[in-house]
Length: 344
Image (cartoon, rainbow, N blue to C red):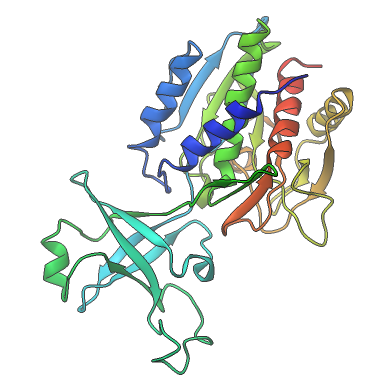
């Protein structure tokens, strides 16, 4: 099974470089539509702004769904301080320590974007005694706009207001040794795997075994992306990152199959089938139980949907920070996705 690594990397890069923090879909959905059109598909939406691609299957008696969420971690303006800095709330599990010193982008409701710098209120070791020791959280971290503003009114006159969404510069890199380093590998690399799968199906004139929905939710990072799924769906596979740490077999060149997350075990029968499919295609895989982690598949279960749920995805180092994985983990994830869709 030959997977096109160039498509994997290029699509992952393009989606990572397109901002889409939780609830901000204005830029990424046109990109999704453009990429889908390249493979002959249209995108349709539900009222949660989830985008879908429908793949016709060999057997229309069953419908399965594969989800790769498009939303990323981000921030939202909670208030404008008297000195013109911006106070924020997090959208998803942001590690404030990891974003200190990063360029951020403020997306206003009039369609403009303003840049700024994420700083700690004790931002310099030359000035503040607690510059190294102050806990980095939403009370000590602010945004300093790249503009000469000195008060709240100056900021308001720029068109910036409470509730504006903020994206964080992803800083994508692809090394000569095959490592992808960027923010938002979670879950834009899974989107790359979906399009590498579409490329493989097109090149080999294949159809999935069953009618397949490819879903791209926008609220996974805050826990309710998969809360709604179309009623005809019988199985929901979440493509999401695999974790790397002391308790895990996961690695940056593997596909990780999640047996349980922070909420619940995944369906035993479906998970067993996926493990057997991984063996058939000789995927470099592992099975792990994840802590402080959830996916849209289990969000669907929690919301009461009548569906079998499972999850797998590329091994990812330093999750919810500036992340890293190897292109081989994307290849292994794509191989397993193809095996699942062909019902091997």
